[in-house]
Image (cartoon, rainbow, N blue to C red; front, side, top):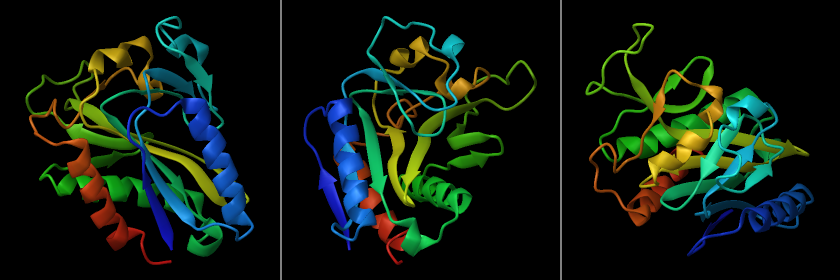
Length: 217
């Protein structure tokens, strides 16, 4: 069984980390079911284990939290769906790379529910959208924007942290960091792409595609 929790309003980051750590420990001992927790945070930046200080370009803009998840700097804030995944890889296969790919494919399948094509790129964790409406990059590559970030941590082979998908955040808030250490490409959202998608619409799609891709253990 996987328990789904949807929290209304804005959830404090430290409260979220405390909940995840306690739940992951309980899952590891068999005292709790796996859990998917859907939240929104107030504006903040998090630094993953690979974060470079120079990528925090506006350190006084929002609170900055050190995070022990993988990855670099990310932004969380209103209008962004954060999907915390507390899943037991002892039951799902102890393969971290495969698990991250499964999460990426879950996001791609969810975006497809809105007729949007997401892409996985070698060397760039997360999900990307090709932008035919933007000029080529300075290196001659097709313009792409990031729509979803992924960063997880494992403890006793139980995952926590997870995914963030941009529904309608203030995209200017991303300018206080170099998102995931990547300067050549930008950031987008479902609404920025012209899709009138609500948080509730996304939640329904996430639940539907999860059952297909990750529901069976």
